[in-house]
Amino acid sequence: MKNRKSLVFRFLTVISVTLLLFGSGVTLKADETLSDDYRLEEVVVLSRHNIRAPLSTKGSALDTATPYTWYEWSSNASELSLRGGMLETAMGQYFRKWLEDEELIPENYRPQGNEIRFYANAKQRTIATAQYFSSGFLPVANIRIETNQEYDKMDPVFTPQLTFVNDRYVEDATKQMYELIPDLSKEYELISEVVDLKNSEGYLNGTIHDFSNDDIEFIMEENAEPGMKGSLKTACSLSDALVLQYYEESDALAAGFGHDLSSEQWKMISNIKDTYNDVLFTAPLVCINVAHPLLKEIDKELKNDERLFSFLCGHDSNISSVLASLDVEDYAVPDSIERNTPIGSKLTFEKWEKDNEEYIRVRLIYDSTDRLRNISIHDLKNPPMSYVFAFKGLTANEDGMYRLDEFMEHLQKKINAYDELIRKYDAKSSSIPKTGIE
Image 1 (cartoon, rainbow, N blue to C red):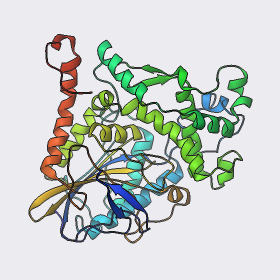
Image 2: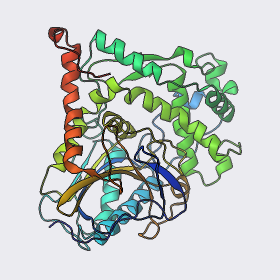
Image 3: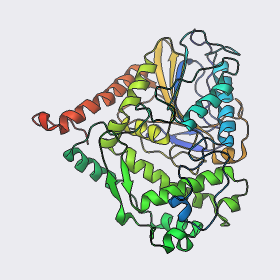
């Protein structure tokens, strides 16, 4: 039962913002539409969970790095907040209206077979995100959320872990990671002032020091996520909590602990945690290692002829590493204080057909910062934000579409890059020529 109508979805909100797309200087206005003769066949979504409480608990560096009292969260540490649930339900309702408009699914759809799949990491925030989205997306279908681990344990598919490590690999990978660390002195200065670091318990007792890039150390162990010690990690915890507090707290002044922060200053604060994520998960030698299971999962879903819609729910590290492994062109999304993967964002792989040719479009669909703070409802005339990705080595048509066969070949190459990495760095395979993985 594949779709059915030649009306195409607008790809940004109906405002007059312009974006550079496809890495070739082509500009498109937010209210422009694609040509009207594409037919939607399937959508695979890789979602970041929605707004949660900070990961840290009381007594952690998060508490001792500021004399201020944090926002009183509606959920326990790391769990989806009530606001996050409402936002996710609204996003699910929007996807329902979009796919009904494209006639990919009928109104009040109740799937009977394997056309729909919801699969989440086994953490509360990801299961809850999938559940809330499904209730807005298919409100009468009673969708089951698939998990493949014991509750509250990380699923290897969604864990951005290093499954191959040796000394030579660690040396080369960490070199790349260090090269990704920008000058954060202005960001450190701002966040230290906002949280009043120098009057905090941790600073006064000497357990927390002035932030600097000079103390950053990486931890690279097999079957574990890339880790970090030093200022950037501590500052990331504060950055993450401040951004979440800004989303939840209706009083922007209170969210900044009494500081009247501009949008640019909030972006600077967010840039600390965004940089932390980039450094740990997007270096070329790291992303093809940690994203490998999810690349295979996405490939499997795109090749499943029964499937109409797949929802894979994980984390920002999943989206970042997948995009980096696929050689996405550099990007920063508009109307968000988070640079690359706003909370609750959906990385969509959309299969379309036109004139008996199959195409794919890859986008990030997300709420603007204003919508995250104010929870306005989406509809087809007032859609969420959208950013169309460009990929190095691939050529998009005038609509931002890639030929499906070319993209799938590209995806398979990136899946195979994991085995090439092992052949390159495995001492037993030292005689094999270099693969070009850098």
